Length: 210
Image 1 (cartoon, rainbow, N blue to C red):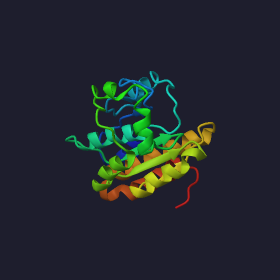
Image 2: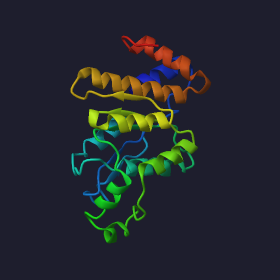
Image 3: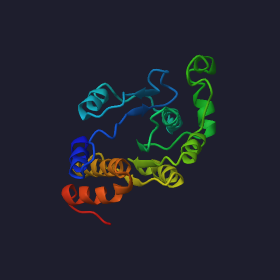
């Protein structure tokens, strides 16, 4: 993805270092403070993100997931000097409800969470509103029908895109690569964003619907 995006930006005479990417992994309240949210550094090289993901394994459960924690991190990043232009959400379960958050935090106990950066409970719609206020879209990929409705709601409310991702199919990986690269190019290209996406599609995407 990085290589393709850099290639297209170079063809358009733009710097290939105009974008960075960060990975964040959220879990649930059965995971401790070090595991409920794990975050990579901001990177311009794919190999560094692959190295980060090689350290990540499955953990937790508890049904609906702590998407609110992932979105909380996104809102914090949006407040930094560089800010963020968009969020890409991938998951197989919908977000916790407010009552879920309250109940699930009892797993480790409020006394535990009060000593962490997650001392104040939050809800995914509250974090979404902060992103909406800054015109930051959340593009969502749902892996299961279980997550579909919630992920569509998240994307629509932020003017993002939403698609199904079949991780068992080679086409799924290609679709994810194309989706992410297009949105990176659209933002990186500024006023030329749409034309840069068309150039990318013409060169790399075998078929697409305009």
